[in-house]
Image (cartoon, rainbow, N blue to C red; front, side, top):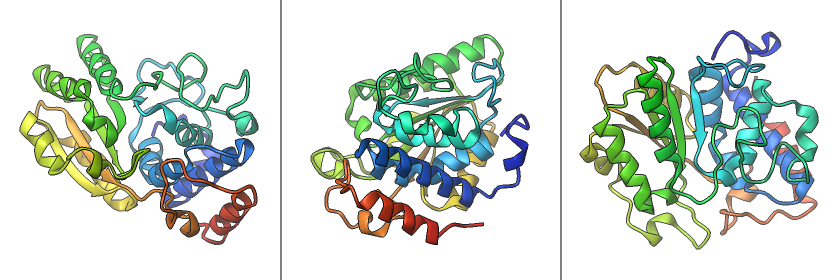
Length: 283
């Protein structure tokens, strides 16, 4: 992370960052009484490493030309990314309670036109990686050394446009592109692996010519090492980090729900979930 980040938070641990992201997400979910909270809790560790270890950015200059670009292909994960951007100081905490409301800068699905720091508009799945390929190619042609990160879901791997982008990235030798796959094995209708065979996933990406790493996406040290490796390798190839995450991670009574893609949270359970997190607050 660039040293332009808020100095009062400069010594905060990654574990605390992830905890803060989860707590912000729960608070936003409580405002609307709904939200893709299972995904936000599950991907919080990856976002903590992304924004507080890997990415170069300036919180007060979200369009700084030297920044690394973080593309959220999965538009409905916006609640998670807003939480990370609040923690990073890109968005003010004071706007948290406007989540999902009319005229808010935090709509329920991520939109670049509304939100500072939101690089692309997510919506129909399967388009994010293609946009990221274009960004990475443009940066290379401008000789800008910034990286492009693209977070996509395991469900998007069933989209043909995703694999076209996978092939294009290799064709253009985009070693400044890092894809992050959130493999939580959940879709609206059930398990991703039951809808369309994805495994062996790493071997598939490798066969296309990508540098592949597979990690436990809720193991902070492992995620941190994977990000470091992805940036450091010298081969002229794009890189992918497949992060196997647990939906609703950190709130046990939600983790146990049978349906977690759009997990049902009763009105009194938001406070219960936050209270549980508060008992587990890391240093």
